[in-house]
Length: 534
Image 1 (cartoon, rainbow, N blue to C red):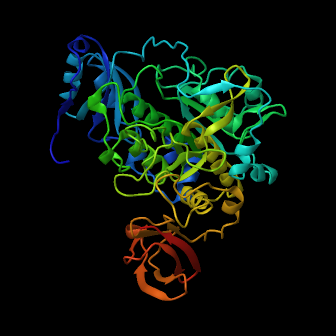
Image 2 (tube, one colour):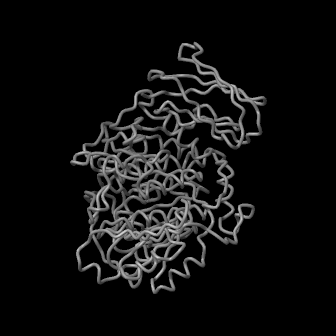
């Protein structure tokens, strides 16, 4: 953006709010005078995070640098209380009054000051107990075997993939009982709880106020004697409270962003987010259907940046299927995010499960799993059931965890493709349950991805296929596309360089169906199966 841009975003709120402190996100225009360098990312990222970027072939850039500390200090000097910074969005969350927010907006390095929530919670914030919004009824002697079997997690566990060595972050609204219940004690005893933070009230306390996260977490990590076994209970875990159960404002999207950056810095492999947003307590913050393009909402842009950096992001599609909204919620709309719908025990879509497509016509949800009568562990320690895509998401996240363990050198793109291509209706997806119900055995036995290049997305929904080279050095790449009968449809050649990596292959207007893409480089050649969806 050329020139100096000063803007104050003031939302229409009741007059009483203008006399109190509120929460704002302050966006900076640059990262001038930074002390960091792309040649020394260990200054601001863990080694595992660096290794994951290399594996994804994602180049560390200025966007990964911490914000300018001088800018933060100057914002603080206005009298505002400063809290979490964002490297990816280049800004800081502050708590202050409207008059001071105007002063901040006038600083020469500030682009915008966005009101993200009224009131204060970040200093002296309190949590109080609250009941969950999912339907949950206590039961006895309930087994969760069927929900594991539906997507092949039982076979995954039998093959020895229980999540060992995989770092998993859970974003949710609170984890009552996780620190005391016997079902989670092995995680603490074995030192596998790596981090916990509450972004809602700026505290390390995530174990009070709300138990939705407890139930979600149990589906992945809970172990209750012979009556319950989570999908990937041996993983390492990072518990982040980003959701405020007592109000709904855009600050929660920023909390998601802060948590994602913290998870990325630590080297997390998989994020499960059983959260979603479409409408807020302040209607001026609401999203509309046209915003479901994966690029508009704060949280969808944050999720996309996490995926770009090699994190497998699994998110609930939403429980709006039987409401006036009916569509998925953000960040489930983001490309590369594995959006999870819900099915019942017969494999049919649950009435409440949000549907697609996205505003730009992409298939969503991506896949579906049991979210209708899901078996979980309650904050009381007993086994119960609950309904919602909140509970199908951690099942699919468990699948992603197992696949990352089974394929330690795989990129997030490969994990995504394996999950999609393993699903029950990959050749004929719809906007109800997406590509269908995924399966570990199918995902594990798909033809191995070539080490030199990757083709994605697969399935293709917008006539654009991307060829990602692991090390483009000016070599000529020949690409031939065949139909399912083996007839050659088109052929092209391209010189692969870093400047055009990934190379976008504009496909002819093919009909929906199965195709084969032959990619030949001077050192490798491989034919990939792709599915075209109109």
